[in-house]
Length: 167
Ligand SMILES: *[C@@H]1O[C@H](CO)[C@@H](O)[C@H](O)[C@H]1NC(C)=O
Ligand SMILES: *[C@@H]1O[C@H](CO)[C@@H](O)[C@H](O)[C@H]1NC(C)=O
Ligand SMILES: *[C@@H]1O[C@H](CO)[C@@H](O)[C@H](O)[C@H]1NC(C)=O
Ligand SMILES: *[C@@H]1O[C@H](CO)[C@@H](O)[C@H](O)[C@H]1NC(C)=O
Image 1 (cartoon, rainbow, N blue to C red):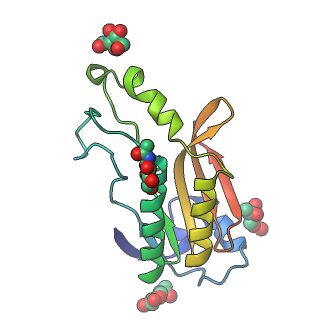
Image 2: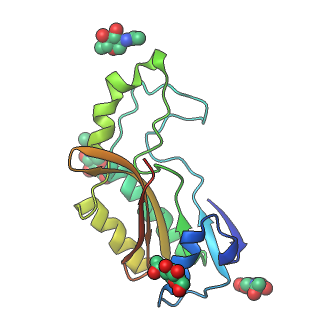
Image 3: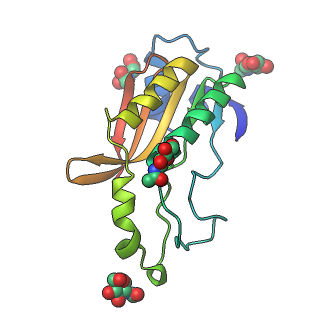
């Protein structure tokens, strides 16, 4: 994990800055430390340019466990917000035709997507509340028969401040 100090106005998304500045929570707004997750989710093929998913079995519970550890560490290290990379839960679906990714791995991917309000989702919310920091969750969201590339900003009180389906 990598930390850098930035002012809220300099964060990547204007929507994020607006949502944070409206919050009643206690983080020092205007000068907030951002924890940016750089480690890979569990069972994700490494290194970065490895597209081979053979024997990589996703497990959303394990990914949520790892996310909770990072949320705790960010708070312990003094961050006011933790942000996860796109689709960190359960892992960005990099794959190629040779690997036949959609045929062999898509079903596992869908089954390991996160549903808002599910036990794994609630575990993340509880961890965020306990840590007392903001969190920008980035995940494959399973909603009814669809999956979405989603981003949700959670307050230190566990409220959803902003929720977005990118795709
Ligand atoms: C926050 O406040 C700004 C300015 O008052 C407003 O434009 C924006 O929609 C608000 N954002 C949220 C998430 O309520
Ligand atoms: C932000 O806070 C840090 C200490 O945590 C301080 O060193 C820095 O000067 C502050 N920056 C601004 C712009 O207030
Ligand atoms: C997924 O991970 C959890 C630990 O977080 C473990 O208890 C469970 O057995 C795993 N499931 C499978 C199918 O491996
Ligand atoms: C992908 O996998 C399916 C089912 O295993 C198979 O029928 C198909 O030929 C494979 N395609 C490629 C390009 O390997």
